Length: 429
Ligand SMILES: *Cc1c(COP(=O)(O)O)cnc(C)c1O
Image (cartoon, rainbow, N blue to C red; front, top):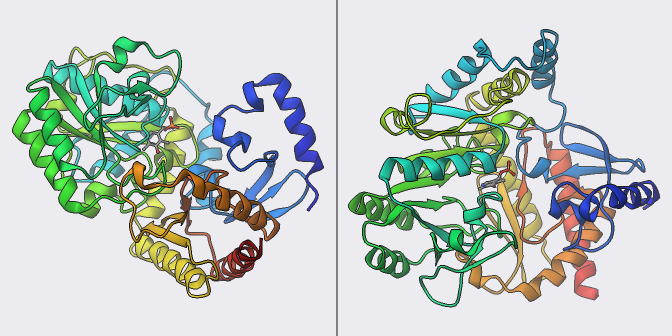
């Protein structure tokens, strides 16, 4: 496989950007080697600048549930753009996307559009603090919520800790407002509520944690969080930036039928454009400025081009059977690989159209501590072998893969064959 054009562009990029990239995981550091620069995508396929073709399961890290360059999205976007790209004044396109979402999602009554998932989470936390008048927030080790200062915190050594920053530049005083506990651990949550009675503004969780492996939580644990939050006057935030519009139209909340107090969205919602959103009941949302005193704004918020991309994409997601078909394809892929899997430690964990490749003896992994960092060596080897087979995944063993509506059974068969060959080479190495 020839990748010299990518390698050359990366050398150039390193002179422009820290590490040669505009988002760290793209630099391929956890799999080694040099990132592929992408020239174009169509449906489930992408082509790099050297002309190599891949079946894509990264899908821009989740947003592209309709694959690349979807006709419906493209035509909506180009139609909108003819009339200008931004006004900083309201447009009917914002109403359209909001109506589509709110009339098909019974978990929120009002929404505010922002420009990224990080921004959605940052605003949701401020809203929770403004609404409750409390300052502390509780998060789970193994959940990612974007690069919000107070959430770049990893667990310390105890069960309930203030943890340590996972990034320099985050003040100690911020960390002291963030309580960190392990996933799937009721005792830790109970202890935190006892220790910080009437101080916790919100509990934030990815209801389907998918940024540090796929750490599936039982519905009972999520229900337990719901009950604990209600009992303590704490808001429950579901960070549905990945799971929203992915597991069902109303995300994990809809899948588990659990009502969080605030939901955050991103990724799929923008149809491949930079959009995030947060939503809640009318009462909670009334705290947001200009109705209330929690300030939050954005020059490009509700951008018309992005709104029309989102509307076009979500309209497709609402077609009857959309999610059933996506799940059917994902099961076909996983069953195909696993029924011929030659490498005993290899497992695929999945929910809906999200899947995670793991190397473990465990039958289930539900907290970050259960992932063996040593297993990432296998992923690294598998990753490069799969590229040779024309299969592109996100370049990290902690990241999940996504199936889009545009993946064909032919794609899936080729992927299965590529996996089986790659895994058998792993057995020999
Ligand atoms: C991707 C992601 C974010 C951050 O979204 P950006 O658009 O990258 O800022 C936040 N929360 C979750 C659960 C995510 O998966």
